[in-house]
Each structure stands twice: as C-alpha cells, then as structure tokens.
Amino acid sequence: MKLITLSGGLGNQMFQYAFYTALKKSGQRRVYLYKNKILKHRDHCGYELQKLFHIEDSDKGMWLTRLLQTPVFGPFLKHLLFPRKIKERVQYDYDAYRRYTEADTPYGIHMVGYWQSERYFERAAREVRRAFTFDERMLTPATLACLRQMTNRQTVSIHVRRGDFFHPDFVKMFGGVCTVDYYTRAIKHIQKHVPTPRFYVFSDDLDWARDHLPLPENTVWVDWNSGADSWQDMFLMSKCKHNILANSSFSWWGGWLNENPDKIVIAPAVWARSIPTPDITPKHWTRL
Image 1 (cartoon, helix red, strand yellow):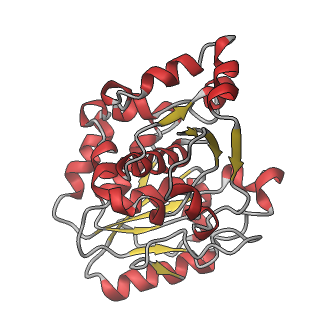
Image 2: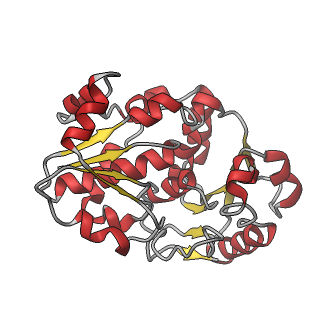
C-alpha cells in the first residue's frame, strides 16, 4: 500500500500522478494520492489536476484521499496506514528508487518525491496520455485563434523559463542552464532539420527572449496566458510539431504530450547544475 504526495506546480503534479498511474497499472491496487501539502501551501496555482483534467471525477481511490484531507483525523490516519516514509534523496535517478516501485509491501509506504523520469511510467504511457487530455472547452479565444493558426505548419515551441529560477533557493541548481548559447544551438538544429519552421515562444520573461534569441521576424510571441491560464502554454506547446525545452517540468510535458510521430524535442544536456540527470529525458530526445 502506497501514498504518493502531490506538490509543486503543474508539471511536477503531472509527474507524480503519472507515477501513481503506473503503480496502479502494475497491479498495486492500493495506491493513493496525498494532496494535503499542496492544498495547505498553495504552491504555484494550487492543485491543478482536477481543474484541468477532471481526474477526481473518474478515480475511485479518491475516497481515502478525501479522508486524509480532514484536519484532525487525516494526520492520524496517515501515520496509522503509512508508517514508513521514503523521501526522494536523488532527483531524476530512476534506479535509486526502482525497488520501491516494482514490488508491493505488507505495510503502507508514504512516498515523497517528484519521480521525474518517463522510466517510472513508460509501461503506462497510454493511460497517462489519456489522463492528461486537456479540456479544449476551457481554452480562451486567443489560444483557440493561435491553435487554428498553427494548423498545417512546421511549428516549433521554445520555452524560456527565468523568473523563479533566479531566486536564491533555485539558482544554484537550475539557474544559468538554458543560456543564449543553448537556445542558439537548438534553433540552428531545428533550422537544419525542419523545412520552414515557425517558432512560438513561451516565457515568463518575453522581453529577455526578444532581446537575446536569434529568431526570424515571423516568430509568434505567446504573451496572453498568465496566472490561472498559464496551463494553456503547455497545451499549445503540445500542439506544436517540434519543441525546444527549458530545464523545466512544464515544458517537459509540452514535449512529451506532443503526438507528432516525427517530432524533434530538444532539451538541455545539463538539466540541473548540481546533480547528474541521465534519466530526465526519453532516449529519442536530443540533448544539447
């Protein structure tokens, strides 16, 4: 029996839910989600999986999740049912935690981590894609217009994440990875392999991107999705034919959900400066 903690922003929540989905498919029926941390601290835009993917509506295991959310009974129930806690010590390292994901146990385990590798859920990829189907009825008119514009073009998303990656808490690990040199090499790689590409730029710092990226005049700068609508950037990334990622779980999912069989997905060779990340990207992606 396992309890999977949800935390962080949308991309991290999706990794954790994908891990949960894979555990359930492997035959471990008693797997549950723990939302208390994200509901209490309101990370980023809060708990987004239900709002965007209507996940709770179809998940029969949510009854225990709801019980665990109760302020008085919840903590007692968690410690009673899940006495052993396993915390992810080495991010992005699949092998370090494989033994905890492949076998069930007679006692409950509370698993805390991000589980950021396709290797955790590749056997459940179909179920994960089905779960992460965006409700297009929620799209804004601007996003719908952009989607129509993208039809029948060699579209390429570029995600530039700066903002919180330059906060002291994150700069040592994530800051300074996706440099102008990285984006320049990625753009040249696309231009070499894709005929007449049309670039779409998504960023929390579009001014920096405009000033530094060597892009053609017909580049589309997606500047209308923010706050509660930020997820629509991920949706549009996933609808592009090819993707240039930041070292961000948000753009990772944009690339992974891209269903173009001939897609080129480019990710930085160094995902985090302080630790190796051999398992962060699928093998067929290009790392520069």
